[in-house]
Length: 245
Image (tube, rainbow, N blue to C red; front, side):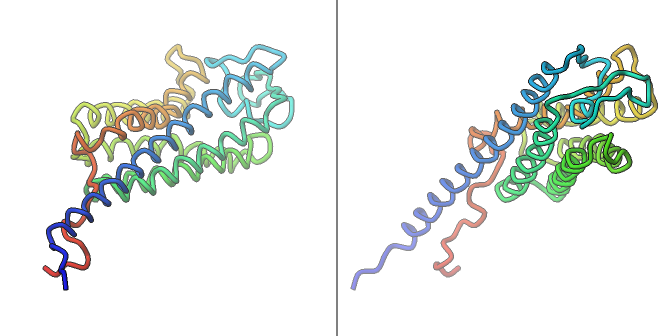
């Protein structure tokens, strides 16, 4: 009877784990890339369909998703978005892709507790995107505003926590993550306080709301080559489960 060399079995198991980790990283990268691109494309397409000029500086992102034509209670700006179902669908899709990517990323990330808490906070942020998509501002303003606040605050806190705790990430990525989170967190309070610093109401909102999509693009661009940068672990156990210690 021939016995298989345990070392060979361990090597085979290690290779299987590497392939699995590589596929998972690529999946996360694709999910987050699609999430971000579709979100920006939806804003461009829906905004272009307005009869009046849609301004990224003066109009909120949520103006694109309102279901009726009206003058906004604050500032009296005119809102009329004929393709609002596309924008609301984009909000929901952003949630699904963000959350799926975060869950999968936690399985392959060689990170500490703080980075995992950060990814959990991103999942909460994703749920908030569903809230703003299901409850446009002219349908249920209270629920819409609650969802927006979660996106502005929790999302940016998640970036700071991730940059602070994700030790396997390149130092520059961690610094950028913290910088995005801090700037977005500060912009959230400025936007909610009606302080625009010359950017316009919509411009300041985008400073706080778009930090997470920008971060997702950065991570998505790095994940396919993560093994060389030691950003993730492909093999959480070095022994084959059938090989005794």
